[in-house]
Length: 347
Image (cartoon, rainbow, N blue to C red):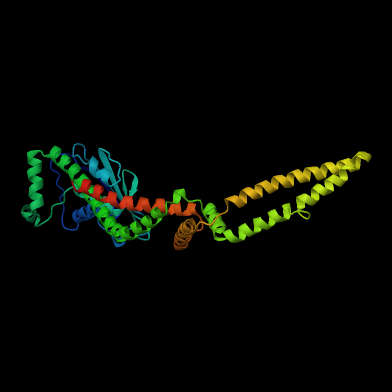
């Protein structure tokens, strides 16, 4: 109930302060005394639009303030839902500033007009002519029945369940819409994912593949090159190793004459040892070179598929393709999970 009403600089009123007690309070007066003005001021407290023309002195601020005792009316949830602080004695204030700008406060906190309008019907009832028509409204009748039946606890439980239902419904609609959008992409994403999975990217070493392909694709040239090098190393009379050994034999005759000659002999001897070791390595490599058309074709097919995938996804490495494969897998999995989440929300 309203316990106090203060009106300053409104219509005909300079400054009025009314105290209202429990029970019946009657305000009387002749026509023009200001009875309707009090109701107009109360209407501003309940969220009606402010009219600067109703301010008595346009150079001063108009203030209307009401105190409402609302203990035991179970309005805590209402205040919370509208982001307002609940007080057992709630103070509502409207101000009309010079220039016409209006402000509203609830318990000294600034509020928007829609917040004030949300709680106003629960602070005070204003009954005017033809209010008896309210009796035929179904929601009014239900409010009366609930009040008489003391259904507050049942209503609170129902409101909690309804809120949960509304939240689930909202989530359900959002997920259903997400599923519609996801399903449009599911087939394409699945196709892209399967393309990459077939490549078995985790086991591909692109550098090794390219090297193997170049080797197998140039087997004949490699064999010819190794053969020529071996010949240059080992050909009688003019081979590198043979001529080096002949030079070593010649230097061995004079190495004892000077430390410099001996050093030169040792260097040549070391070079011959290195050349012979290098020749062994070349022989081993030459023995391993052999044409393998089947392996060449497999390698070529794998590289073509890899290059095609890299070009399709605008990347240059296997690692980047693996990351794309993971993202596609997550998208596909998320789409499949939507059905499960939707089913839970529907239940």
